[in-house]
Image (tube, rainbow, N blue to C red; front, side, top):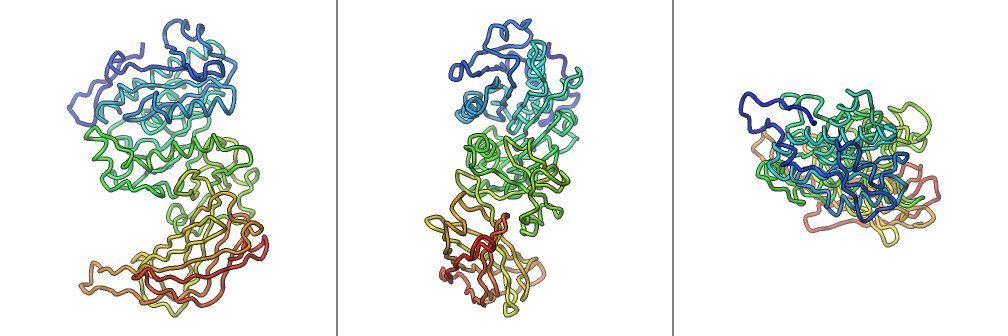
Length: 480
């Protein structure tokens, strides 16, 4: 029923044929408003028997959740996702459980994604036969699950049906990164549904490092914190080799990868009026975002007007209903809740500053909360007198405002880094001080905080720091 698969003519440790359906043992669990805690097992190819004898309601939207490598449909996080959908609206939720097919080696799990994608397309087609609306079908896949969603979407299109939406949560990168090992239809892309949104959290240009794809592949691609290693995560180099190819997967090396699911789940569970993951475009791409040069002005994020490629958007559950398309960037907090008030620090460096390399630390104390900026001065970006630097951070939602926090305390310290260049044998000593003409912090609403004076920031060799108090001056600059 699932069709035939091509057998590899030449042995390759990375290119394998899917295991049999009996071994993979894919299960589809149905959650509905009437059976929230006791999911029902449904099947494809049984002449609609299991669907017709379940609580499936063809006139309700369909949400499909697909786990990734080493995952399970019984994972607490997956079940939380099913419940979050049902808490939010009346829907059918299908949990795709391919645990046995995802439990073997990573190359074997990659091969099994095509089988599971075909199986899922058959089940969705049975739902369509009963009257379900494909435009109201939304498939959410994490890691390898994102490519299963893409494969199913491609197969349904061959039968004249296009899914309404696919959400890819850090689609898996190893083996999928190029077309040499897999056919293009095996990977999620914008052609697989009417709307494809993707959240990138663990991409890397180095194939041994990032679990997720870094390139754009949807109608809108979100890159929280640049789409690479996430705040508070320490994934480590070579994590893909350590975890994927020796059949282990540890949360400590997959922290950034899993963050994509956590961000999406938070976007579903945030109450009305709560924080939303607003993301903005950056024509200069990732380098411009990381430098802070693309931070939006107050009028730049009008969600309902303007060119979609130049508009802001909301990452997560509501992304389809906001205007932004293309690559969008945002900053998150390092702990839950991850959504926060996005801020940009602007540092004007005095001409008194000599050549130096290091990290400028800025901590804002606003009420009982604090927000930290780390502004890096890399070797190729040596601090020169008279230049401007930017840093990005996210404050806890609802804790920083001209009315709530009329006084903000800023603590600055500088960590100098000694180093050697490739062409010089002598160590370039850091400048003993970095001089700042002005320090400012702003948000996208037009509030800003500014302190104008020459501050001499000593190197942080003994954890020395300078502390300044800044008083706000109303809503138009949120003043330091």
